[in-house]
Image (cartoon, rainbow, N blue to C red; front, side, top):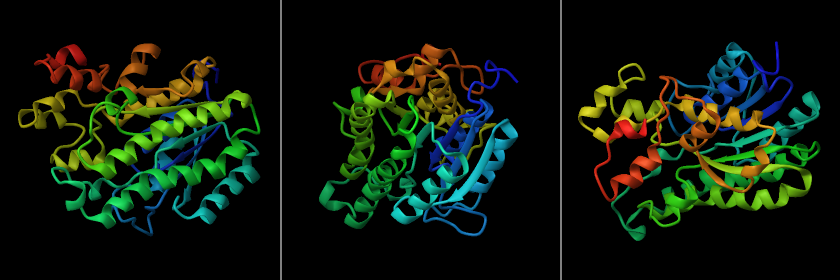
Length: 306
């Protein structure tokens, strides 16, 4: 084993919200780089979350991390429950004595999002639940885990969201609650970057592009193997990316000794692919956000953004 093949060997990571999608892929890619990864979520082999998908569990994620070359540890955690998060962090402290990387990927609110309605026409209960899932969970987790992370210099915090600061800053995400839930992590990364400065720490916001998550693929009635069949109905889906892409983005950031240059910034998987040279699972380098912006004023060729 070398630092070139396992650059994160000995690093302790927490991926909060690692049941499926980006969180699962991030955990697996950290494992592939040799890290020990604590993976959390609400869906286990014994209990479902409100998302209602039994096909992905945190135990399976942990097994995938270990199979990839790291050590995966599943800890059932509802990140809205402060005592559960405290118990999680206490366990990491007791077992490892340190935390090097915190990935705040908790969400699970896709089933609550509706577009095409005014704020007052949307369901208030569902809207407030989105803010709990996408903002409150991140705040609780950071408040609880950061004292352990700053114990050693050089810690990394990644706030996973949807959209970059440049894109979201001038465009409305067509649902006020969703807009707030996905802009808050960008601001969190900015603020945490300021606070971590004196500890040599780094905080960033990171967004995938059009993510082919398990739920997205199911919605389009395709699989990762035949996802291109959906392009005929939705041409822009051709610029989509697998969760592996954002996972590799996180692993590259965590392994970069000069990552502090990104502190406080909003980043995308496509942007980091160009910087670090990694690719998606199929060898391409999709730039979904570049494609989306170009499509607002023209008809870009998707081949120019893959």
